[in-house]
Length: 285
Image 1 (cartoon, rainbow, N blue to C red):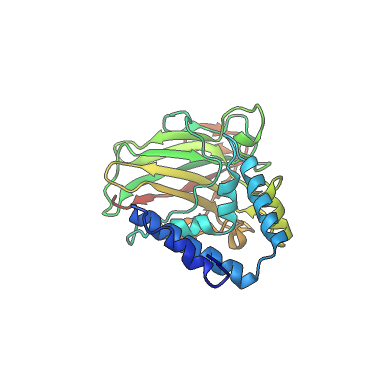
Image 2: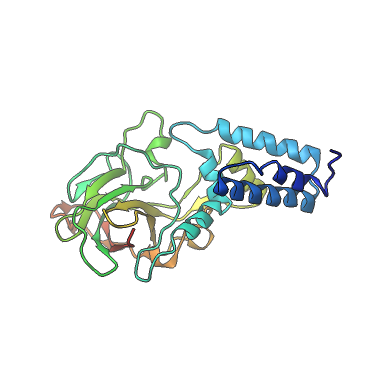
């Protein structure tokens, strides 16, 4: 009955003895042991404990149907990338995954090859193309590719602009040769939202909130593991200090600059533009 700092952990674990779910028992048991160990290690004060409760409450209150502050917290603490690493140990040759991020939205329009997804977004025109294959090199026809990104100037996603149109996001389907292609704007580096509790925490820790420029993709095909990843712009100043630890060398790609002239989609542009090519390789399911 008289639990103290040396006996309380075992008492809590003992209360789980009748749980009929072995995995839940394992996960909650480890959580209790590590959480109690953390409290003992730092000798958490009551004021700090209350501050943590208030922080988590504020994090939940910042969430809505367009923003997930808990995902942002997980991202900035490196938890999302650790979960990703544990769950996506891909075979040699498969494209590496990275964080999902908080700005994916269901219901993006299905568009044909070379469609322009930029809408009214400002930025340098950019043409992205490539293929989707399996690890044996077989082209995957009919693979679905969701793409989403920030605009090319302010670094904002469409969901961050109140009342703004859905743009810089779409879904494509690969052709018989596994090819995809679309027009967008070249992404720019941007800060993760700092107007909430996670942003406050980053700044108090002396960390910057910036992510290097990138384009998100989520690719699915029957018999293959769904791939969630980014394509990063080579040379970005934040590649080595991404606020969410999501950069992998294999995902960093040159975005090539071109003068005004014929673009890959057959149109003629009176302004400079960029092109990027990336071939995705899906691991087996």
